[in-house]
Amino acid sequence: MRQFPALDTRFGLLLLVILLLCSCVSKPRVINLDAPFNGFDPRVISDDSNSQIERLIFNALTRIDAEGCPIPDLAESFAVTPDQTTHTFRLRKGVRFHNDRRLTSLDVKYTFETMFAMEVEERKRILLTGLQLRIEVPDAHTVIFRCGHQCANLPSEVSAIGIIPEGSSSLLATNPNGTGPFRFERRINDIEFSLARYDGYFGPHPTEDRLLVRIRSSGRN
Image (cartoon, rainbow, N blue to C red; front, side, top):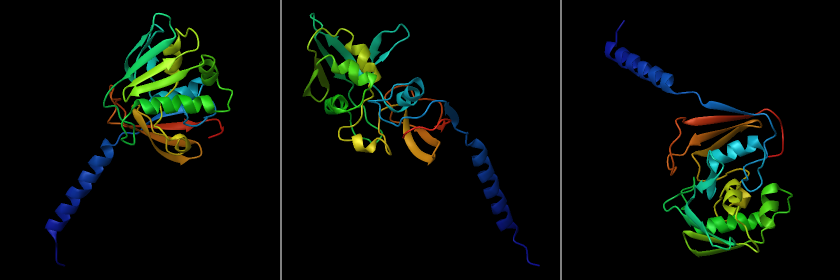
């Protein structure tokens, strides 16, 4: 019988390469949610389990540090007037959403104004609605919040609101886009979905390539 040693050798090398590549693929870290998952809308998510996922996908204007104080996040700086009624946030330049759209002040304005228009009794909305806010965007990287009365705690309150792209409300349920360290990848089934590391993230990159979110309790999506 005629032999083909060269072909056998190539096949063996190919098989070895495939096995090595498979062995290098790391399993995603699993995040188990014990509470019902309420979807991907950062304007209404409030419980701890949902907020954990929200922070992976979305950024807010500010975040709370270990001392409980607001510090810049999407905003590179913020300032308040002496009468504590007007807060000005300067956005970081070059930040992009997961769909590669560049973040601007219009996205911030859209996020808050659509949240105020919602007919949901949600803590985030109720707290900010009571401030009688007006939002101005004099340029692409400046957002001004004018309150109807003193609002010294505004930088802390806005830390709970993840910013979404302008016009994207209807897409949040199936294709959420944020600016966070992980992007939504796909829904695997009714109780699992995956997140992939976003290499365009403006902050420190996470070490995990992927996360698997597993919902232990059923809830609305």
